[in-house]
Image 1 (cartoon, helix red, strand yellow):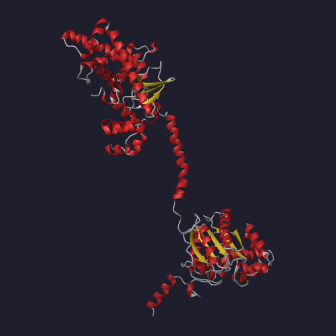
Image 2 (image 1 turned 180 degrees about the vertical axis):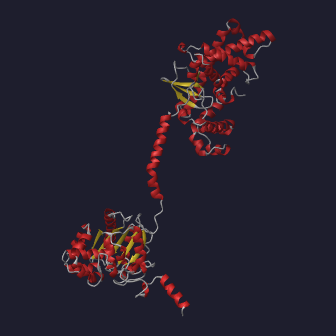
Image 3 (image 1 turned 45 degrees about the vertical axis):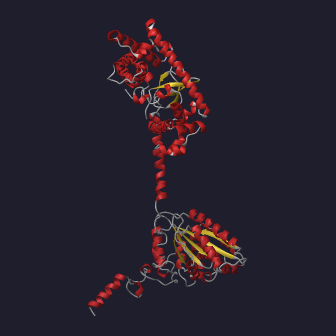
Length: 240
Length: 374
C-alpha cells in the first residue's frame, strides 16, 4: 500500500473487503484513536499496555463497517462516537466485575444509565460545540493581531522541521512572562530578545512571525483543546 | 515531510475548509462529501505531488537547457588562446602601429611599423586591453604627442585584417568591417573632443594584402591607400606613403583623398585591384619589392615564402613572431633585407652566402669541424 494513498480511498477499499487497506487505515489512524481514547478516559494511554487502547482500535475497526458514505456524517466523528461508546461499555463491564468506576463513567453515570449510547453522543455534540466556541474565540483574538486563518495557511512552514522550530519558539514565548507581556502589549514578537533564546535565526523568525504569534496565543490563552491538539500526531496520544 | 492524516476543521469558506493538523500545519482543502462542521475532525487527502510526467518534463527541459547552454558556457569560460590573433589592426596616422587582437577583441601584442609608431607605443601599455580601449589610448597619445593639432586637418586609417581560424576557412571580412566601424567611432569621438577635424576611416582587407604590404615595407593601411590611389589614377608612390603623416601625403591630391578613403572603406576585394593594377603598382613600388608573394625578394622575409593563400591563425602567429624576431615592437626590416631562417628564400642555398642565413645547427657543425680540424 503506497504510504501517500488517500485515507478516504483506503476507507472505501477497506469497506469493500480489502484487508490490507483496512490494516493500513488503522495503522495510520492509531495516533488519532489514542488521542480520542485519552480524551475520553482522561488518562494518557499507551499502546500495548492499556486495555483501552485495544478497545479503541477495535472500535475504530467497527466504525469502518458502520460508516455510510451517503449518510452525510463524517467518518472520524462517527469513529470517535463508536470509540467512546465501546469505552463506556468496557467501563461498565469493569465496574460490574471489579466494582471500580472510572471518573468519566461517574460523570456520565446518570445519562449512561438512562440511555448510555445516546448520552455519549450528546456529550460528543457538547464537546464539539465547545471546540467550535474555542476556535471562534481564537479566531477573534488572532484578528486583533491582524492575523487570519488564511494568513496561517499561507505562512505555515511547509517542512516538519521548520514547523517544529517555529513551535519551539512559540513555546519559549509562552513560557516567558516578559515575552508574553511584550506580545500582548505590542502585538508583535520580541524578536531581538527571542533570537537569543532560540536556535533559529532572526530572518526565519520574521518569516514565520504570524505562525509563531498564533501558536503562542494558542498556548498562553484559554484554548485547552487547541493547545492540546498540536503535537498529538507525533506523540500518538494526549500530552501531559 | 510529515503528512498529516487528519485535521481539525477551524473554518469553512464555500466548499473549502481550513484545518489545523496535529503536526501544527494549517491547510485548506476541499473535503469529499458533506462539508464538515467547525470543530469536527476530518481525514486529509495526501498533499498533491507533481505528476511524474511533469517531473520528467522539467528534467527534460533542464537537460535540454544544459545541452544548449553548455557550448556557450564552455566558450565563455574558456580562457583566450594565448597569442592566437583573430585580427590584425593597423592604425595609420603618421605613426603606424599594428595591434594583434584575439577573438575576445583583446590586444595580444602591439608593434610599431615605423619609428613614430614605436615612439607612440613606448608611451602606452596596450597589452590585454580591449581593442576599443586601445584605440582610445592610442588616439589620445597621438594628440598628446602632437600628431594631431587642434583645428588642423588630420587623418586616421584603421585597417582590420581578419585572420582565418583554419587554413581552409575564409577570413571573416564582415566581422572585420564591424570591428573597423567600432574603432573609427571610438577614435572619432576622442578626436572630436580634442577639436581635431580629422577624417577617420576603416577598411577590412584580406590577409594577403597584409603580407604584400609587409613585403613592400608598408603597413596594410598605407598599402591599401596606395592601391586605391593608383586605381583612381593618382600618381602616388610607396616611397611617398612611407614618409610623413598620412594627412600631409594625402593632401597632395587636391582634397580628393577623403573620397579616396571612403572608396577604400567600401572596397571589398583589394586583391582583384592589386592584380588589375599590375605594372602601375610595380612602378609605384619602384625598387621596393615585388608584391604578390615573390618571397625571394620580399621585405620582411617572412611573407613571400609562406604562401599567399594559406594564411591561417597559427601561421599568422609565426608571422608575428618572425616579424618581431622575438622582440615585440621591433621595427620591420627594410625591404629586400632577409633575416634569419624565416627569411630564407628559395633562391638562396642554406649555409652559404649570408652568414645570417645559417641556422644554429649549421653554425654548430662548423664550430665543431674547426675544433676537430684546427
